[in-house]
Length: 153
Image (cartoon, rainbow, N blue to C red; front, side, top):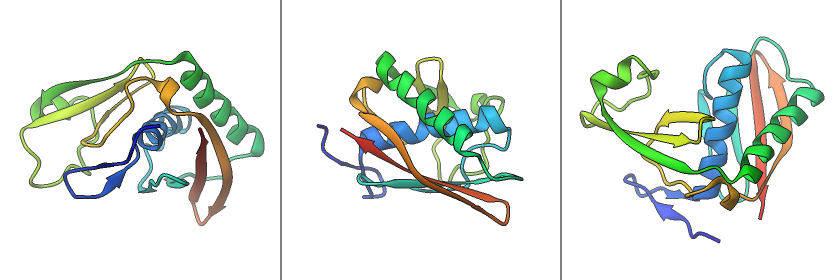
């Protein structure tokens, strides 16, 4: 089991959870077309993501998301990185959450062909290191869908 890592903001990160968050965010953006989470709280024991959605996700949709992510975990897909300039990133990514003091060189984290995202955080080397992904609860209120999840290692 990999130990938590301190990122550049001295915030403790748990690479398996952070990588699972990328998988959920990428699939939510693809399936529902409303972008990645606008709010995230990622911790070792449980994490939550908030999305702007017009309707609540059904139990079937939530189970489908869970199954999809677990399939990628079981595939043991490689997690890689590339470095690009901010100019290159503008055509590929939403730059709205990029800090004003970000360097011109940005890191892109790739999870096989399943997700790519600008990120300065810590990740596993392969998805098989994540453990089983489980959505433990969700709620929708006033256009916000919250998804809470855990990893069973």
